[in-house]
Structure formats: C-alpha cells, structure tokens
Image (cartoon, rainbow, N blue to C red; front, side):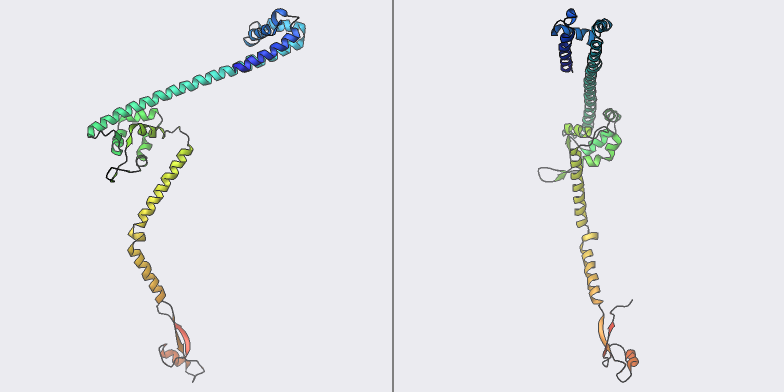
Length: 285
C-alpha cells in the first residue's frame, strides 16, 4: 500500500510540475517539491481549501486533477492502509487469544491427567481409555474443553472412535490403544466445532470405514449362523431334496388298446401293462 501511494505521488508530482511549475514555483517548482506538496495538502489534507483555490485560479482543470489525486491518495490508498493494519492487528490478536486458550486447556488437562494417573498408580506416561473417561468426569476438564470449543458430550460418544485401534506389546499380545499426551491434545484440537473439513479428514474417514467393513466381514465369515457348518449342511440338504423331487416318467395304456384306458389309470403307474408315459411327482403338495 505504501508503494502504491509513492507511485501515485510520483506520477501526479510529474504532472503538476509540468502544468503549474512556472505559475506556482514554491509548491510545484520541481518533482520532489510537487510530491511534498501533494503529500502534505492532498494526502494529509492540510490546507486543502487554499491549495484548491490556488490551482483553480490557474485553471479549473488543475483543481479537478487535484481532486482526483485526493480521491486516490487520501480516500482510497490511505483507507486501504488503515484496513490492512486493522486486519493484521486482528489476526495477531486472534492468534494470541487462540494460543492462550490452547495453553490453558493443555495445562488443565495435564494436571487432571496426572491426578487421575496417580490415583490409579498407573502413571505410564500415556493416556489410556479408562483415564480419559475419568478425566471427562471432572468439571475443570469440562470448562477447559469448552474454552477451545470442544464439546465434551461428543467426546463421550466418540471415545470408542478415539481409541478404536489396538496396539501390540513386545510379545505380540493385543493391548488397549494408548496416546502420548501431546498426541492426545492434538487429537482433541482436531475435534473442535469451528474446524473445517480437510482432505486429511476425508482420508481418515475412508480408512476408518474400510477398517470397520473389514472387521464386519471377518465377524460374519466366522459366525456359524451365517457361514458356518450348519448353514452349509442346510444348503446341501436343500440341494439333495430338490434333486430328488424331480418327476419320474411312467407309462399308461392308450385308450385305443383294448379300450381300457380308464382301468389302466385305476391300476396305478407301477402296473406292468402301462404303455402311455405320464409324470408322477415324487413329492406331495
């Protein structure tokens, strides 16, 4: 913004020096003098009326050009400079306020966590699921989380998600997931209500959904009610029944042979005198 103001002063200084340098030499005798006069009277608005009167006595066009300079320098560029400074001050204040709230929340949670760990005699240096549950029961933790716009009620609902994955010890045994205090605080800050969704959040959501679906498929695969031996035996029995229920073909005498078609029907399908084919179902409806 200051560079833009200097460029405007330089351009208008050259213009006024060429136009009124001989008529008003004490104000616009050369380019540095013209720039100083424009800065003093046109930017800081000191004695604006007298300068306009002097330029108007020479020509009305000079007065209009000076008003254009005042519009660009005093009303536009200076207001832009003030706006930039206010924005910088606001950003710095917001950053400092944010740092103070985060530091307060971190100190409060660390104090509560150490108190809970000492009460359980399990101060391993990592935050566990059970310790986090006890921390959320504290009023100080509730207020500290509210300071950074983290909803403790949502944390209670999402505690299984925070500690969803399990770790393994040196012997390969599965143990509950633990977090260092720094990672724990960073994870809490990512769950603030004012945060915007990022690409990393979408990738993490995709990984979580993939892991959940894989776990569900594994549980269904090992569930005897879905894919166990009893289900396979039932499917084999149903297949055998369907194969055995196919109709058999038998023969009945034709009506033209000795005119005893109806009698042959009464004798049944297993009679040796049957000659006409008929389908006998192997199952009863």
